[in-house]
Image (cartoon, rainbow, N blue to C red):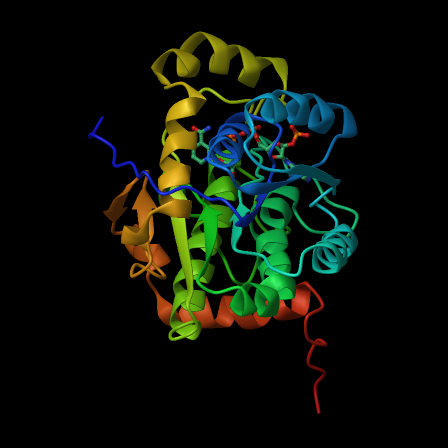
Length: 296
Ligand SMILES: NC(=O)c1ccc[n+]([C@@H]2O[C@H](COP(=O)([O-])OP(=O)(O)OC[C@H]3O[C@@H](n4cnc5c(N)ncnc54)[C@H](OP(=O)(O)O)[C@@H]3O)[C@@H](O)[C@H]2O)c1
């Protein structure tokens, strides 16, 4: 593994929101932020897991730690979360869209979306949009979209974002969601030029988290016996995500993709701006940010 960069910059007075803060990459990133003085806002799906993680983080925190519950597979819950965040926090300096999942089979959300696409991408798109004015008012500010090297698996099809026409494959479904997250980051980077808001996407490393453990026994056994042995501790990812959230070196890298703390070129399929623009328009409609266009 390449040597990773780090920063001495502290986060006192900075309001930092982390989704999926109770486990894996999100937990370790939260620990780093709180330990460096941030006002940490943990967004978690489960009250029990959220409270347990909050207790551990508070023990190391040098600033306030809040917990807000939201199931990000529901676009209504994303809206409710955004309203709560806007009510409570006059400034939002860092938004880390980290929550994510991996499914081996197609599962459909309450809104009728394929679940991995909904949580890993649509919720990111919607939450970021709903908070964007506040994030701009809080500049210099930062948005970090936790993507994945797994975007290399592809799978993004603008004509079948919900996997109704194709057989669902875990790696492809995951790849599609992470490709979409990188495309969104790149497009948002263009649109945020001159605002003082930096947006980046990142692969957090290959680390031993709980991702995928919601799947069946065959996958879980393979994960435990084969994959986990090759993975790093989640603290590596937390340190890298902290660097991306805090380091001044990242400020001028808006729209870019990092492999941990190093800039990397994403796979070519994530670089197509015309696909990114179409995806943006479709996502605005899917998330209800704009009304669906009706034929004249
Ligand atoms: N681990 C790796 O090697 C790796 C590599 C590349 C990218 N990533 C990315 O890193 C991010 C974090 O994953 P991880 O590896 O740390 O996995 P993890 O340990 O499973 O953590 C995922 C987090 O997302 C939350 N989450 C999942 N579905 C949610 C929902 N519907 N609403 C709200 N929160 C939800 C989980 O909540 P619960 O605890 O309640 O389930 C958990 O807090 C993901 O975006 C993942 O794709 C991880």
